[in-house]
Image (tube, rainbow over all chains, first blue to last red):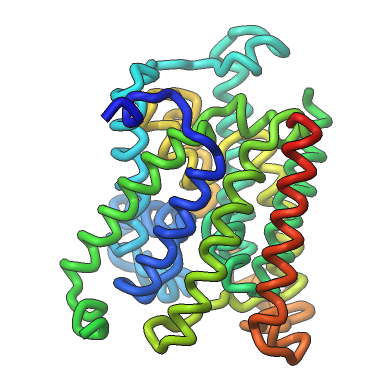
Length: 168
Length: 185
């Protein structure tokens, strides 16, 4: 089981593995892999804690009810899977500032925190605006040859490359 | 047989969780739960993200269309429009460049101990998704349906059999990966 302890696998092996997982989800769950609606549902669940059940009357939450569903469990699974992988390889570590960021902007956690928070907000809006993220559109949608997903995925990278090039 | 599995709610939640664990394990082993790897891709110095995505797409595309041909799976292409897919995609991209994780790899980054993902990215995405739900009715009326083309797939658009798209797409993607590999990135 030495391979479970390896720090990194070939990206092609990982990609093929993810492709096979997509077969499994289409077969056993009749669903493509996706992640971003789980965040929208969680946001609705949190809003419901403060504002009560009238939150479920909002047009958006009628489409995506604030409840735990298949995709929500999938995202929870990602957390545990990555935790196990990093524990097995000994890479698990609490890190505030990633190395590449530190090199360019220094190791002040608050700056990295602020940009990550802002980036998260913009991404949260964009993912729901586009109706999917790098998983739902970028992998699952493109593999189904959906026009919406190829367009969205290309735009994810145009926006991402432009932004990263501007800040670095 | 498959339909009965699809209808069992608790079984489905379990399958979602199990697939998620494997997905997260693969993402972490692939290195794409790391900020440095994702930013390396966006700065075009490290092509790990593209290598993983493209090999997943080729594998998934062939397998899922085969399952469909055998009557074992149905496609679920997302509907799209220029107002949602393109504008939303560009907004997502700006967030992607700032955050350095996407929603799925963010969950994996939290699992490996990245605190910027937990306390910055996660809270940000939840706020962003909440804001979107607030403005959704307005956006839905104004921009989201501009240039609507629906749940169209490329074979439907070109009016050809899926395999006439899958085969050239697979060859094109593999050729592109070969070029990336020979350029040393």
